[in-house]
Image (cartoon, rainbow, N blue to C red):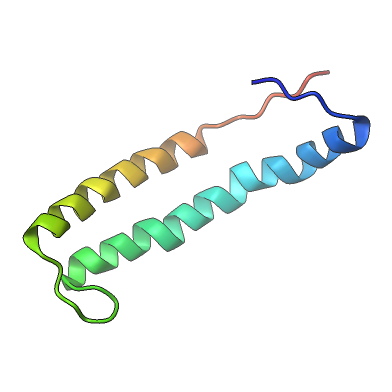
Length: 83
C-alpha cells in the first residue's frame, strides 16, 4: 500500500501511525481481547455471571486462538517510509 501525503501528513504518519501500530494496537488486543476472552474461558461465564454454552465456548476458544495469531502478525509489522 502506498500513501501519498504532504510533508506535514508524512511527519504525522511517521510519528503517530507507527505508535498506533507498534504500541496501541498490540496493547489493546492483549488487554481488551485476549485477556478478556481468557478470563471468560477460565470462569466459564460472562462478566455478568451468565454461563457460556459449550457451543459458544468452542467459538470463543477458536476466536481466542485467532486473535493471538493476529497479535503476533501485528507485532511483526515494520512500517517502511519513502526516503
